[in-house]
Image 1 (cartoon, rainbow, N blue to C red):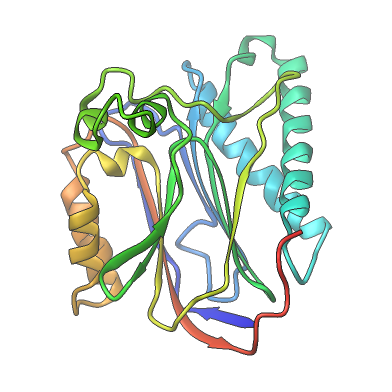
Image 2 (spheres, rainbow, N blue to C red; image 1 turned 180 degrees about the vertical axis):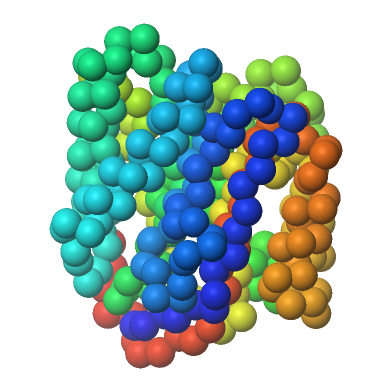
Amino acid sequence: MEVSIAQPLGFTQLGSRTNNEDTLFPDPKVTTPQQRWFMVCDGVGGAERGEVASQLAAIEFDQYFRENPVTTVTDAYIQEALSFVQDRFDEYVAENPQAENMGTTLTLVYRHDGGITVAHLGDSRVYLIRKGVIEWRTDDHSYVNELVKAGVLNPDEARRHPQRNIITRAIQSGEKRAKAEVQLLNDLEPGDYLFMCTDGILERISDELLEKTLGGSDSNEEKMETLLACCKGQTRDNFTACLLQIATVTGKVTHRHG
């Protein structure tokens, strides 16, 4: 199964913050449709440590993928890559003890011979949108999402909850290592969108607005400009997004995660 994509698009902005703790990989200015993996990370830890964490995660995942190439991405491969990255976090904190509390979310989209694998930790998201309808999205690893699933909060209450930024999984140093949640997407069609974003985007962009914008007739560049305009000057947090559109899908599904 071969999945090709159109030109990837993305942006990352400060919002109302003084530094950007989000990382978008690769840089939209240099990426091409030949790129196989894409990441959006949102760092936590304060005093610029979140910025270090998100950049470190993206750099080290990229290094692992380049040094350990595969034709099919499995759950085990992603967890091995994550373990490699967590080792690098341990090394960084050993040399910089003041960074002990740093961590980062991860959303990863990896295009390979078996389809597209999505992996995530934390509350940054990946959406699969087809003909203006959200077909699937990642499930936030967050305190408020656990309350929603338990029936304590509804989604609207969760968006306004004072503890909405508490995440239950992250990439960080230490013995308590989280696993990534991994999903293989192989029921893909030309025209489908994969939209990756940090939670700063969600301050201003609802599921309904995302469906309306990506389901419209504008060019992909115009769609991203619309989403950027919705957030610019309106968010408290940094905000980052990446848009990937499926161009072609050829061949049969021959691999499953294992």
